[in-house]
Length: 428
Ligand code: AMP
Image (cartoon, rainbow, N blue to C red):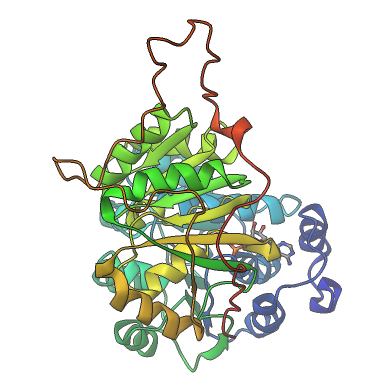
């Protein structure tokens, strides 16, 4: 199938060509014609499936006709990063259309957003809290809205945004097209769907498992050996960008420091960073300044870096959904990726749940040459310091070769694991 078949306005079609999209992804092939026909739609699709263009392209096509300078489409997203990505996608795909999009989210100045809105935009991409502030202040007018999109609805629910969403919906015309995208369909989202969508059609793509281009490996390990194992794994693995997940922001920060000490270019993304710092970290990760990003689940929402080659679950996610979301950050857009998950004895139940979702048993691996028996230090901490390099003995000549400090150069060609790598296909 080709994009030509959709019959987009030529200026929208030019954006597709400029973005180098040749074939629609499955969600695009299914959803775009339905959205163009004006249906309300529930898209069950996770990040990485091309869902953004699945709603952006038909919206751009629709807005080519009709009034300019008033807000006619609103996309609500859970995080600033996701809002920025959608805004960027609109800019990339709609570069020739003359349509304007603005982002609205907290953590940055209110008045510059008011100015941007005053200058006129047809599309607003917003996070719920700040959008409500603008609605309360009367600095945004949604009375001409034609299309409402709720993106990553399940994440908005997780983050406690559903009451805000319901308030926002009260400010938009009842006569509208509503599109809701979600990776999962918990009962609360189903209820919301029934409340605010009219006779929606459902399009489902790859919801119950991560992208099939990802291979999954489990590394059973004692908690105190997680950091040494991580460093060993990184040393033995060819990686591009690596995204590591920890359970808490404190653990993310500590791990960033430990990776830094081991000469890796690492940064961490935590909930309490300023917006400017978050953006600097994301830009640094995207352009390769940081090779490793350590993040918590909340802080990682909306990360879209296509060259993530490895997702490493330093700490086990707290649900199969969280696993799917984390792993969805690699193997994007049909690239391959690896997902390594550290597993302690306490994690066994969660692993079984994840395997149920994957419809496959995930292979347990051990790293050859790694000392799994090393006892916990007296002060037992999961953040055991990385093993110190062997210190030169007094009797050794002073000119002994220094230790190779840069893991990037020291990295071998392939990872040495016992047994073949498992290629677990995501259930479709
Ligand atoms: P999304 O799921 O919307 O976050 O998209 C994931 C990635 O796929 C983004 O980097 C998009 O630019 C890219 N993408 C979306 N649609 C296509 C397509 N039809 N062909 C190639 N890449 C695409």
